[in-house]
Image (cartoon, rainbow, N blue to C red; front, side):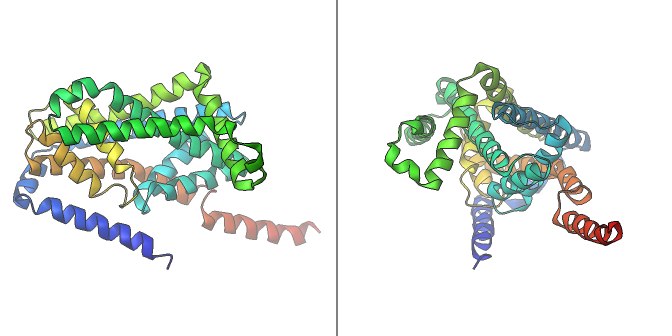
Amino acid sequence: MKFVKPLVKIAISVVLITIVLRTFDVRGVVAHFAKVDVTTLLVAVALALAIALLHTLRWLAVVNANGSTLTFKTALQVVLIGHFFNQALPSSVGGDALRVWCAYRAGLTFGAAANTVIIDRAITLLSLLLLSAAGLPWLFDIVTDPVARWALSTVICAGVAGFGAFLALKRLPSAVTRWRAVRALLDLAALARKVVFNPRYALPALLLSVLSFVGFAVIVYCLARAMQLDVRLLDCILLVPPVILVTVVPISIAGWGVREGAMVVAFGFIDVPASAAFAVSVLFGLTLAAASLPGSLIWWLSGYSVRNVAANTAALETDEPAAR
């Protein structure tokens, strides 16, 4: 039964991609791929790797707010491992779980590792919502469909309201705090308040998140221009965050299928052909996957993997009789 959920997500990704592909000529997609030169692809991967540095600094801001300590090198290794498993596993939850494990192995307490990773993810989502909200006045000049406007506004308002309710959890009645799960949730909310309400942590965390999403938009812009599409950088900055917001819903493998459908719809508002938008989305996904590959090497060669943990444990057990 444990394999049912991943298989369902794989099936959803395949079905969604198939549905999108049926709306246009597949040969047109291949033609768009052929226009992209190797230099552009290398620049896109380099930008994606640079974004990993921003994610590392953002997570460290949360770690510091928690009163914990982690070196930049260790944090970068853990973030890259998380990025790889975000691409390899059925949802980002798997990558975050690996990040918690690696942070615990790196010296954080399990509670600190879990709390900082979860709040880092929450801050990422809040930044995405705020960036999307800030761009609405200009985005509505592009998105003229009233249903799309209503849907996007509703999602943003609901997300921000949900985060606000999460921050206000300290006002829960004391009668419910006797449950362990509630206390754990209150600890998470307390850490979120430390980050959000303290400029020392809030400014770098939010700014780094915004810069990372702008970086994703720049990658999409580079790929689109390489395909000779008539798009502006501002268009990408306005349209890419809502596309990423849609892919947050954990119903597919690393957003595949969902991202392609959202990209086709979003860039359709600026008259980008569906086949071209699909091609850009696929190359964007492949760029993120390629940039995540160093994480697989770090996982395999470092002391974080189960293989190395087992080897280290066996070595310790072998050394103990000798010491006696």
